[in-house]
Length: 221
Image (cartoon, rainbow, N blue to C red; front, side, top):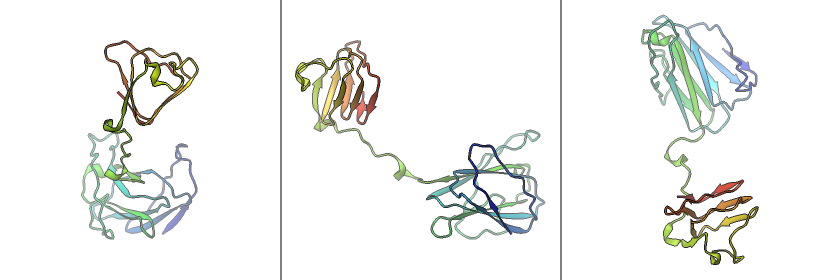
């Protein structure tokens, strides 16, 4: 069995209630298949009952996670545990919430809902979340310049500045990537400052950096 689901704004609060016949597999074909998360709210199953739901996606996805959410208020406690992902086709004997996915060719995720194991936590919701990037390689690269290659400067030194004078109110200031500059005086209100190197605040003075906009590419200490 399969049905088409129209494009939906993720923030409009829309949802569907669909009666399903157990012992069947269903395919949900999203018209706009770029979704980040889906919540499945389910009722109880008899121990030998099951339903398999397959959903498509079109965006680049590296990983899926399914977690069991909160149980209804009339039940005590919750079981917010991670569910099991398997790299194979699903079986009717798998525990409820077992899922598998393919991000190479067909781009789908399938999840099994069943009465196995038989406990109160099967009645509630399951959250499925997709990750466009997953793992250590997704962390942004360090942009902080190495202090070994920096030239030390002081804001109060007129020789620091190409104009031969300290920056004035309303000016745009750009700190080069090879500078380590110490702010040792209070600045006028600048229009904009871009810090590509390292800026330090003099710990022996009470100083303030005043600017309408501050853009940090490097590091402020």
